[in-house]
Length: 359
Image (cartoon, rainbow, N blue to C red):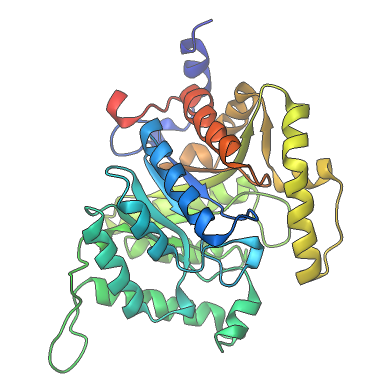
């Protein structure tokens, strides 16, 4: 049976609000988790391989996570360095951070590193910044997490100034290479604190930054898709008033497989792996696999089922960018490649997405 009826049925509501500037319903990106037990060098080589494959599949962007030490079992403590290696093996795909833990670094240094990477990559950098989820990282860097929001706001303001070409000293020296164009490609992952989330999104819009929203869920510190939709609406209204082009990225976990039971079996080791880490760090009790997946709002099963869930997601339909990841699984290299392929060829087209070269 042709895909066309399914595409039409699934992609209707929300496309006008969320459409990317190029006329497609959204841009498609993937978030790379390097949380396997591969040695670091092997994991980084695998990252390059996956970005190359994603570019060939037509993904618009690829994003790397930022975790200090091995928090979350991740290997990526220096995302801009990793993206520099990836840049040398790709030519088109956008290179993003999701997200760089900005308050634990000097914004001037981040701007310098990002500007150099932008030159090396042919101006493909998408600089997503946030405050990070782990208090122990703040402790290690000698920062007080009680001032988290204030420090973050100050860091973002400083990053803006540097990339805008403001004089940095009495000699009038400015960022080199210049980051004026990169300034238009900052994204902010705003707080999930319900008392601050809308105000933070509005501030991002007023500054001309994109909005990054993490995966929806019912965990403490997560937002539901409905709550995220309200945040996106406030962001879009503020962007319109400020005269800025809205950029909204919504992240969702997908694991396409025609056999849902087989998909659940595939992600079960990842569920146990993540929970064993969080239990040790946070003292959280382990849940059963199905309960965990429900609370995590992971979309697992046949591509048509996943696409239908995404089509009904009020935050996703208002977004310009869909960011997919394959958590809570920790896929082996070939399985990771299959997931990238099936998402690009079987899930996203049901929502109206096509690679830019085919649009």
